[in-house]
Length: 105
Image (tube, rainbow, N blue to C red; front, side, top):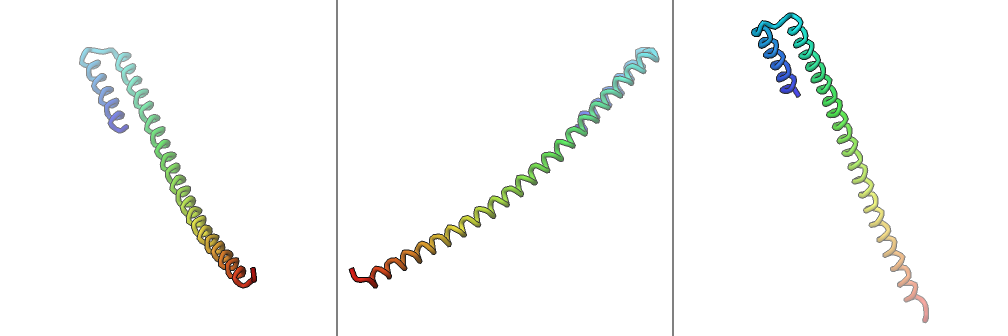
């Protein structure tokens, strides 16, 4: 974007120089300056828009990273709960088998 602004400014200076070299009228010079000013204003507005977009993109990336961390913690919690459920299930199976052995069939 800085290159764009520099190019616009250079074009305005060159255009003004060419107009002056060609015996341009004061009106022509003022018109060229006005056009250059408008181009500079548009370039600055584009730079501000690009900066705002960059800020929003960085915020979105931060939010995505936070969401990923939360998902990882939740997944870890699910894994821990699955391990506990498997342990309880094995305990129940062990109790069932020992109870069957203790009864007469």
